Image 1 (cartoon, rainbow, N blue to C red):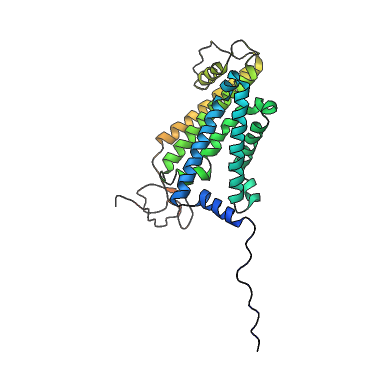
Image 2 (cartoon, rainbow, N blue to C red):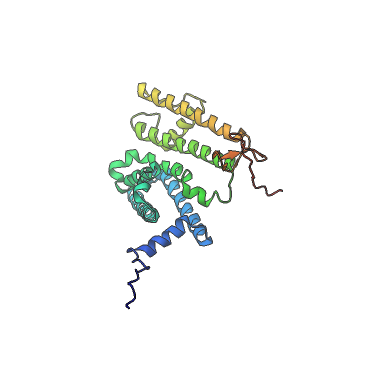
Length: 271
């Protein structure tokens, strides 16, 4: 008798599977090497955000240096986005994330600075997308697994991001067309005095459009300040999903879930 054919249990590996597995381990793994890699990526990301904030000043100092740095940052961001996409299990699902589209738009402003520089102030949104990403909290949040800290950091980031986005918009829209805004510092000064409702009155944007911009900055600034204050004064909560109803946060000393009454067992290092 001849032995029946046995199916090949070792299915052929798709091309590039080693690279994808390595990228997944670095971007999504919990090993010490992966954590160090993600910390390095976060440091680079923060340096890129600092470049975005200083971009108007750098461009006024020298166009050649600015464009060289612009394309270097574009190359770094493109490689990072390509690596994250390749490491993701399903690229279509990855592309459905709004944060990804925001990063792709930022990359477009870097690749075409001569045409999209007027929208370059939106690059600072990279700070918001970074802090609100799973990548950030999977790396930093593993040390600060605290709902209050996460909410405070996100609220502060939203406020800082808005300040520089609004400053960039005011600078792009009014510098050179209104004598009160002569540089980036003037635009930053106007934004801060407006969103804090200080209103010294030494710089006022002209026309109805200027008044509308001022109103938006004031209302949004007050809203973000209130949100930051709420996160600072909000009672402390811990993240511990309920097994029954899925409620994510509870009081640190909670014994029962407030939503469904299920018995909880929240880890406490002090016990």
